[in-house]
Every structure is written in C-alpha cells, then in structure tokens.
Image (spheres, rainbow, N blue to C red):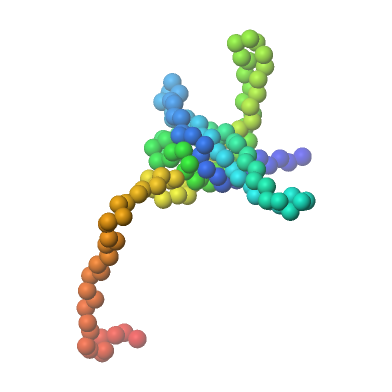
Length: 144
C-alpha cells in the first residue's frame, strides 16, 4: 500500500526559535507553533481550542527562522511528521511526534510580529510626497 506523509500548518510561534548546530555545522532550529480553532458547540457557544505543535527546521531555513522570527510571529509550515524515539536517563523509552519542516513561510510584517509601537499623541501623521508627473502636451507620441 502506498503512503503519504504531508503536513500543512498555519499558526503563531509560542516562543523564540531555538537554534543549534550539529558537529558538521548544519543549523537546526526548534519552533513551537500554536494553531487556533474556533467553532460553536451544540449549545451554540463559541469555543476556542489551541493545538500546540513542535517543529524542527534544518539548514539555511533554520538560520533565517532564528534570525527573523520571534514569539508571536505568524508562519505557514509545510513538512512531514517525524517520530523521535530515545531513552531517558532512567532507561525509560520515550517518543515524540513532531513536524520536520521542508518550508517555513513568514507571514507577518518583517520585524513587526506582535510588537506594538506606540507613537506620542502629539505627533502629526506625515504625508508621503510623490514625485511630480511630467505633463505631456503632445498626444502624437502616444503609441495607441
């Protein structure tokens, strides 16, 4: 039987990316992702559920994620499920299912995320000035 392992997720980071490097120098970043879901239950009340997912990103994408993303940043992650298994110090077998990202798309405004900038109330908004448009008197030069 054929198999297919693909995950598409969109949410916000729950913490700043944690980057580390393998002995060979490959970058690895761990991301925490929160995905919110809103729905109405049988009683008609709006319910919000949050699903928390751990994501691992490798290579150059790990470096750019650590450089540009921070807690609260909205991202779109495309990847696949990966099962990690290990033994803890007490000899107990442990496992964790997480997403191995093939692509991380930054969705928010660069450098902004959830940060709020507050300007003093006394500052007046500045209008952008556009360069003047040259006036053409001769319509014979128009190609259509």
